[in-house]
Length: 395
Image 1 (cartoon, rainbow, N blue to C red):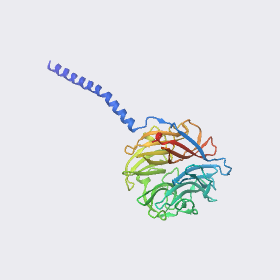
Image 2: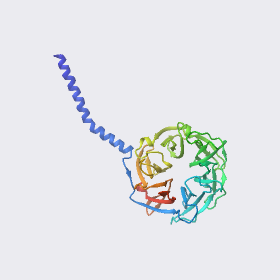
Image 3: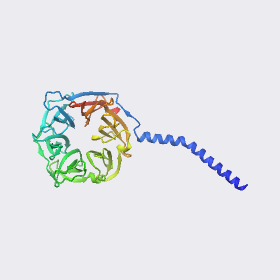
Image 4: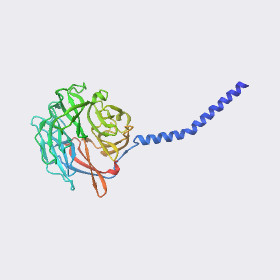
């Protein structure tokens, strides 16, 4: 009898516990859904306000019609946009680096200028590097045939004001290393920091990717004298776990820097590092986000209004064509909290495009984001275009 009573008591206790759990379950689901909603983007959005114009046309009469890989420097009085002018995406000897100036106020493009060309080389892409004294320079990924062989960074320097530029110079050795490709830069505490890549065929380079035998590490370089000299600061490939990376970007963060890396393994990653570029936290966006199916081409990190954003060529579905996307990043969790398709939500056959950069302007109390990119459809030569959005829809 006592044994039966004890069994009944246990059943009652178990039933009470189950009922209590049933009571809590809806709250747990609600709380979990709220947490997911806060931390993870739920759906792709498309801006309602969108304007597009061609900045440089592939039908402008030039023999070299393949226009690609734009980068910009915002001087406030005008915006300078550099881009490759060649015959194909790569391996087109004689391709040069041109610039177009977008005039303040009207935004109208100026006449084009060629700032770098080597008859036996390829000026593949320029990256603008700013210096504390007001000077800036285009660091150019210089190549030669075959197989996009790097021949060492070239530099074209503009003195303060940007009206005139100097002759093409070879950057040369940095602590015994010749770098081949510069990705991003920022100025902090009177110093210029640059992310740049080594290549095994250049001095000091070592192959890290068997499938791409020339590909080496991505390093942080520093200049304390406005780019007159440089020094090695950190090997990010090693710091991030000896991962195979190339195009990278960084931005200041309250704890140091936020870095994003494009992997040869088709993964896009975020790395939170301290002021000395030691890893504090990391995230694999390709594994963790439904809106990043592979690596992001030529990623750009932007910090504005207290938020962090990732811009670049993206695939939200591996089976669909490339898109240009704007992703907001939570700086603590390193998760994507909103995802916007800036171009090709319709799934057109974009065969090359979407290295991009952005500048902002105020007009009549509204802020507009002006995205400069390139785009080619159905294997036609791409053009340099500008997409304009209402900032309130992206932020």
